[in-house]
Image (cartoon, rainbow, N blue to C red; front, side, top):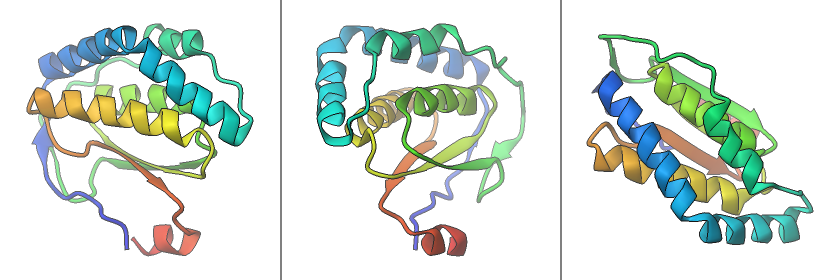
Length: 151
């Protein structure tokens, strides 16, 4: 059974903007760590990644911030993504989920796991730092289709 968070939070546009800005700053100041994760993933999954393309994701997020006074609670406003673990998609959809007042759960194979874990953990630490919520973005690996469907 998956550990799906049932905490709730109210949308706060100002905090979302601060979280995204802080994430962009931390991303820029941690390029050596990100490059190590990319290198690990390239060795394990034979996937070529480019940190510049990841950086560009911050500028290419054309999804507007959706104002909402609703509280996200118990699976309402949750998105599940089953995919190959592409970090560009992880980053883009994570930022989109924040902008549109949704929690997002990624279900990936082993491809690019180091980079994805790093991105999700960095973003969740910032979200918690701003006291915006807990586990708004989660990454699952090695979960069967049956487990996903039953959750």
